[in-house]
Image 1 (cartoon, rainbow, N blue to C red):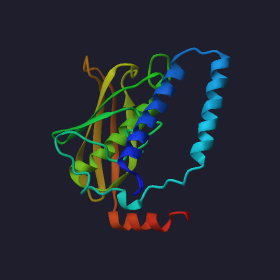
Image 2: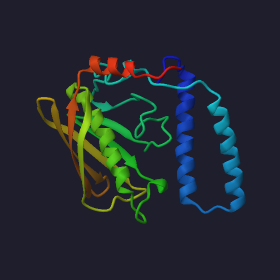
Image 3: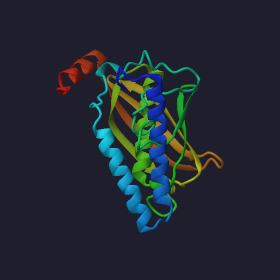
Amino acid sequence: MTPNDSDDVLAGRGRFGKAIRDLGHSFAGHHSNADLLNEAAESLEQLIERFDEGEIRRRDPATFGDHRAYSYEQGPIGETYPDRPVSGNASPWGLDTEIHREGDDIVAYVTLRAAHEGAPGRSHGGVVSALFDDIFGFVQGVVNITAFTGQLTVTYRAGTPLNTLLACRVRAEEQNGRKVIMTGELTVVETGQLVAEANAIFITVDREVLVNSMRDTQPER
């Protein structure tokens, strides 16, 4: 977020982000006629013009990777970065996750919907991969590191169903130098069925060096 985001702006961005996500699923999941489609497109194009009139929005590098601010307690995890693409409440592409710390595991509860469909009735595999990648990032707040994804491998055990509550459970297994090995599973909550497994290698970085390098590459306003 930017330093100038007031509470009412943050609330408004969260509400609008959810509306965009719901619109996408409604559009993808229902038939509509040409008149409605053209009317909606015109309304959205007008909104885009209005948003484009605003000041360019950039994330402050100082907010990135500060595990001291994100040292998660047991139970539900509150908002960390509202624009986070997969789990942020203001993200147009978000999955509406509910994230918890359970022991040393991070668990994200999620229901994938119409716009996530790949094969009929099943989620696109790339959506599952993005979910794992994002939720692995929360493990940094458990083991107190700042790191980037170095490698991510997803094994799909079954089709990932839509409109069904899922649990994405991940954790850190071990650390070898700068490499942190993480594993995770995606299951159907009601039945316990395993639909995907993931293994990842995250590479730790020095936070201060990273933040300074991002400051150096920030474009001029």
